[in-house]
Amino acid sequence: MSKKFKIVGINFDHFHMGDLLRMAFEHPEAEIAGICDEKPERLVAATRNFGLSSAQVFTDYRACLDQIKPDLAILCPSAATHGLWTKRVAEYGVNIVVEKPFAASLQEADEMAAAVAATGKLLAINWPLRWMPGYVTAKSLIDHGVIGEVIEVHHYGGNRGPLYHGADKHEHTPTQEEKAASWFYKREQGGGSLLDYMGYGATMGTWYLGGRKPLEVTCVVDEPQGLEVDEHAVAIARYASGLSKFETRWGTFTDPWTHQPQPKCGICIVGRDGTISVWDYATSVRVQTRDDKEGADRPVVILEKPCQNPVQYLLHCIETGEAITGPLSVDISRIGQQIVDTAAASARERRTLKLLE
Image 1 (cartoon, rainbow, N blue to C red):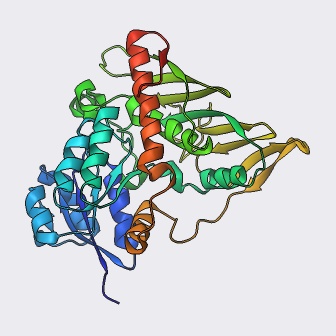
Image 2: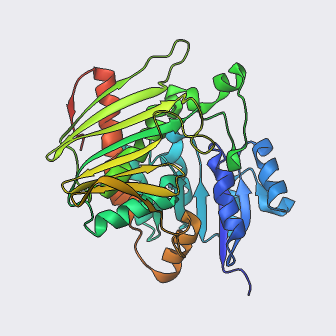
Image 3: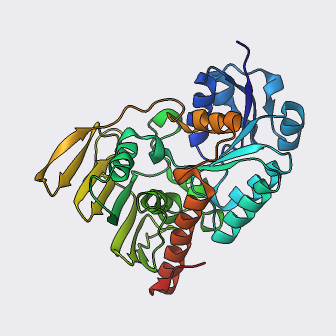
């Protein structure tokens, strides 16, 4: 069978591009038709890893899109330029998936959504936690009423830092020079743990809470010496049902995909009739109910096609015309962005703020 879908990867600011391209490479009905970045040295590894020819490698996104005419564009720019790159690519009438976070601001998120909607194409925001079986298991348990109405969500997310690993989680120890040069550590480019990680908990939490919004948010961030961005942020969101917490940390003792740090990285969900704890990369979730207050471990579900990874899911939606749902949808991710924006403003102003609209 010939390949059906042409995929391009544009802008390699975020190392998750390598992971997403691998999903495209392994999809039986897709091909990596082209890759593009203004810095050619960032294309070397992907060119080698996926056996691409020189004709598939670009430094000008316009040439890439004009020549390839892809079905799906994967974008991994710095957080502060998600809007810029989404609007650039949307002009070519292409379905787009942007790696988390949604945007640098709520206004930018709305502009991104409008730009893609005007073309009649799909826009998805990828949150890697959505594809971990434990988090899918938790949503299934909630949907089946196992813990009743969800009233609290508590997320602790992070790792040793964004430069300690690359594509496919290859280990790396960054130098001070690399930190100084990286957009992750530059305020004007959307750096910092709050913008990098709080969207995970805020967006996944919104999914678990059935799309409900908090009334107000209070956030505090650290102020690391010698850095202009935060490495630790804690936000308390007050809902009509109670309080939820979204905490981010660059500098965990270990990375959760090798050894779970303490505190563990994951989400605890509280319902009116039970609780669920989900830890990153775990093979089971812990569930308490009124009939089993001691609680028990339940094995995670096995992800099935077409919901095993974001590329597979997006190509399914493109082919069938199905709407994007859950954390990848604009609606759910926009609420997550509202929480992040309000948290960032709260930290700057050092006070509790009503949810920004």
